Image 1 (cartoon, rainbow, N blue to C red):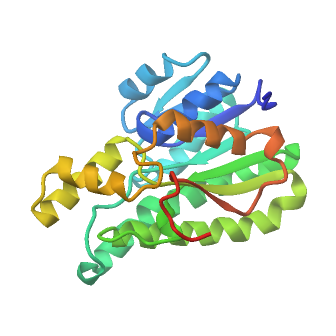
Image 2 (image 1 turned 180 degrees about the vertical axis):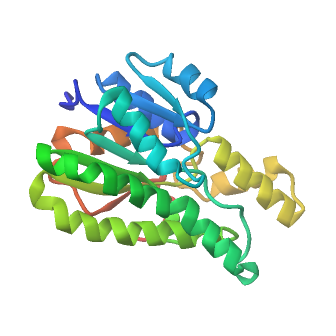
Length: 257
């Protein structure tokens, strides 16, 4: 299927590994000029060198002023993008009963504030062009909160609510706003969650992985490129009538409709 993305530009946040990298690679394969971002320029540039036409920028998005600095760097490199992919590492795992104000602040600072700043900086250009795609790489936790990920559940749900509100406001202007919800995809983040689960339960990481895979109807963790393909479609011209929604890529893990 021709996705109608050749010649577009995309900013993919936190794209030096995992789901961000998979999404960036899928977009680059469709002829999109992709901006790869990560905490260090060396790593971002190395990943960008593997994708045709990609640019690497090293900025800590969560640091004070990070989102504004990224906007400036992206505009200088490729202009403000047609596609904005929101992504970032989740907060430290932990139970809800141990959540304190510092943890709440950290969840909002990492998962909400920088993304809203990026949208605020890029949205006017999308409106002027009459075309834009905003996609959040989120989590199935916004539909079914995940045990021991209380801060991630909190921050991702807050961002999802904001994005749904925004989607309604800009739908008539050629801009779509969606969330893509991964289940267990084989990424470093999934490995870290398995390790935390092992530490909390006294099991081995392998035992946690096997037990988790058994709860997924497909019977395995997903592959990053499977997720990236869905992300690229949601950014495509063909997905122009898909907005304000959260789509799962989870192998059937979440049991609700």
